Length: 152
Picture 1 (cartoon, helix red, strand yellow):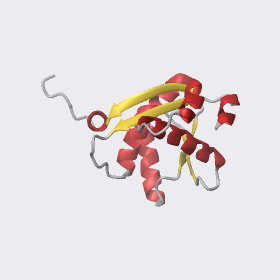
Picture 2 (cartoon, one colour):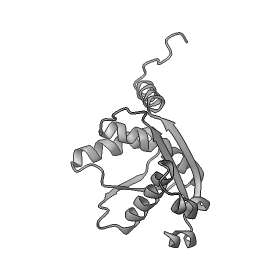
Picture 3 (cartoon, rainbow, N blue to C red):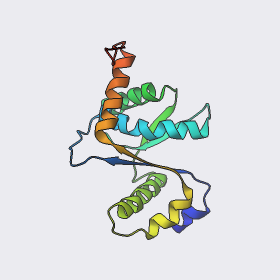
Picture 4 (cartoon, one colour):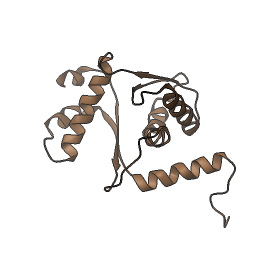
């Protein structure tokens, strides 16, 4: 973990407040959640050629393809997306360690590792799932041409 301090990395954090709600593990929901922080990352880097690597969340290729399609639509950018196995790709394990240190801090267990990575955090965003889902549904409806504000 301390080796991260010497690396030129930028960490973007999304904390999702579920308030006890169950969130179905679907490509649509996962893409909606990921897009909330990806848009900020893309704004920060403002680079025309972007490659995004995800830990292989879905085992079925059709789910990964649906996820990729939704992500591209939500961030409105052509990006290269790959899904890798965390057992094969060490960088994904590093991301898991960062996530674990944030979880430990959030749950009050221990913040020593969070303190190590804190200088590398560019953004730490807390989002309520109900509000995020509402935003996503409205965005989806807007893409289909449906007026999400009928009084306008």
